[in-house]
Length: 374
Image 1 (tube, rainbow, N blue to C red):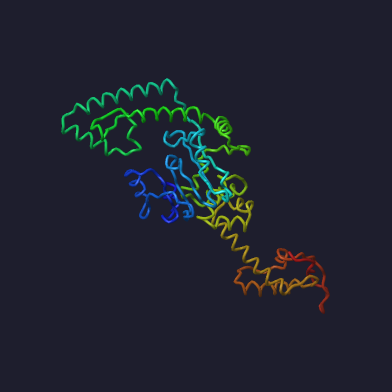
Image 2: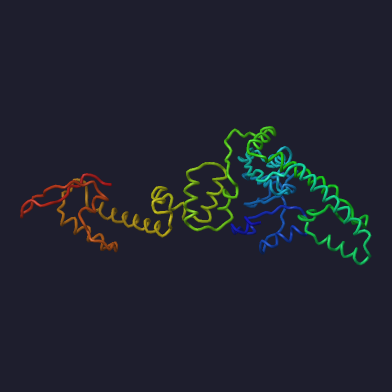
């Protein structure tokens, strides 16, 4: 959701595919007017530019885009977003169905590794406490008076799905009309812990799991904190930081880098303009500051105009007196509105020149011979 907001995507550009629930609909509505839960396009239907899809909604579905690239983001510190490489990632990788899609066989997997490891014993103690709380809660809720029991049923129904089982495994069974132990939530928490603990200990283990699941990982992995890699996609930053990051991206390669770079280019096309006009060394020398870059661009454009004017009046082989050079430059500067005192040495920026003595009616005087064009 943050990506959509910060990048200011429009509803017509975005397809959001999540589970069918009131809570999901409410969260999507918070993005802004016009955003709503979408569906997977059928074969032959037009696809939107960006499709955001949860792993549960993605599983078992087929996509028929002719040019879609797949990015999977797995945050192992959040149980609901840690992707099981051996099962879920394999399923996701096979969802692009059209053979004509050039990106069908490629998948960009963005993940982090465990920052703080939870020991198995500590996790088992957590499960035990949660089970005991659940049993007590079920007993108290089912034995409560009619009014209090009705209130607790309403309270349970109001809990958002994404936090419903954070503190206990208690659920209300509509068919039985009583509170029960949600064993599926209990098993799922153990499963998520195993995925977090054993899949994402470090990059080496992740790579081995990918290889064991028949993924081709012959290209080098990019080891980086993904928040740093993607921050340019979701945050508005000072120009200096964006310009510096863009220059760094232009010097690197990789799908993640290209994604960040192309996003910067689309939002701030001037970054590419400055880079191609001035080059990384000159931009760095100007400390990535936009005011200095604009001034440099202005100077370059002015010099190009002066060059065009001079190349039309001065030619290779000409031998010109210093005074005549100054007069020619004065005319050009005045025509272009350049506030600068003309000097014969200014020609060094536009021509290859050589000092000479030129015969005149009043004797030999200083001048320059034009030997080449710069």
